[in-house]
Length: 336
Figure (cartoon, helix red, strand yellow):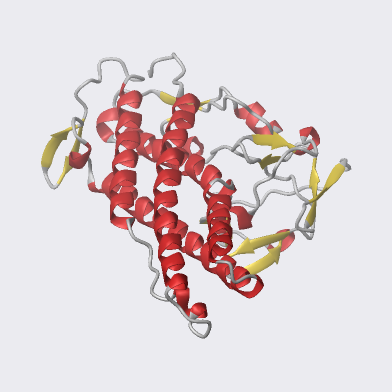
């Protein structure tokens, strides 16, 4: 049976998220600075008739270096997650993955199996592509506004710097780094524990949630699942089911649908900005108090008190424990 000492997964994810956030913010700041300086030079060399073209041809520079640094960081996080997982199985110090018929030691990340390599590369590319696109939109949108309101080049440049800083230090990067770190750690652990060499040494899996918020998480916390139990990989926190009211709109691949119209097989958008297939429908009629959350952007939703929502600090907070000072992460914060 696996080591009963609980792994400090949450602490490692938090540490990894901080490291990723620093890399993201530093590289994006450098890329933004380069773009703004080129726009400033273009403005200085333009006439009144051509000033509007100052942003043309200003493509981001430094993406290759950013990709290389973030890929290295993700590789280290993924590798360390596997090394930490190995410590949970006493005596398993030389576990190997098999790739293309060759047995490879888990000593260097570049020798890990293709699944983990592809995961890290795809996540690295997707995250950076999204961030660069969002950064460009922030700078160019601000330019079109500032261009119409002032001829002062220094003021325009300051506006662009402010727009870039707001994006770089905002929720999209903060929550994004936490989500990416969590996904890297959990993907590595899943890959590790599903290897035949490992499962021969494991009797069961235990559901652990360091901060169970909903009733279902509280009930499951500490539960053991046999390896052959199909439920052992079904429950992944946060499990805030049955917590929103009828007629709540859910975003899916085919557009928005009322929650009561969602069926098994639909793909719905998750808090990780990914579409996941619905595997089960759970609902019941219950006389329960609910809350109306009204956001600064004017949007609102009705939701039961035990429903956890993701906040700016990447922590899940029960609705009935929210305060007016809490900053809730919305889809726009991650996608835009």
